[in-house]
Image 1 (cartoon, one colour):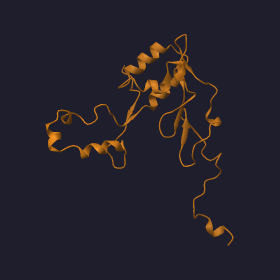
Image 2 (cartoon, one colour):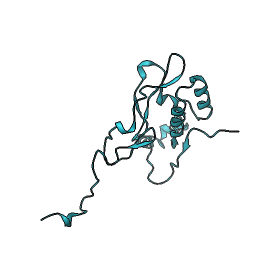
Image 3 (cartoon, rainbow, N blue to C red):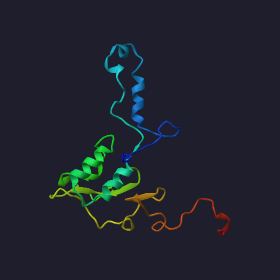
Image 4 (tube, rainbow, N blue to C red):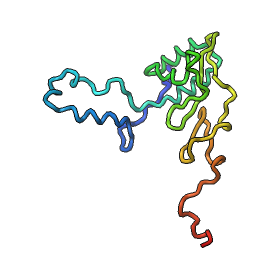
Length: 170
């Protein structure tokens, strides 16, 4: 039985999906006489870039395997991924790379993981909970290990400008 991949492909061709704006600088250099003679100009503009990958299933997979043998976890994860680099966004191999909280995305936070001396996957701080965290802003939905935090508790009820203005005394 084949297991599902640990990433999702997102449609990046639709209107409004922003990728890297720095790519646009390349268009000023192409279609010139010197560029048409250059071998480098005939290759891909950005061969290493891959857009439209969501690795949330990988992060949940790693969190569910805390306490397990790292070699088996890593080999299973790599077999179900398109590349091995996203594993190390969350897992620190060296002690100086350990972080309690890892930000992966605009407002998605996950517990930092590391490999201990017995070659087991461990959380840097297993006592962290979503209730203990405060969001950076009111407008975004923040998550910690997939649990939403800071919706309206710390900021109070949300108010829209102009709504309820007729109730206020003049």
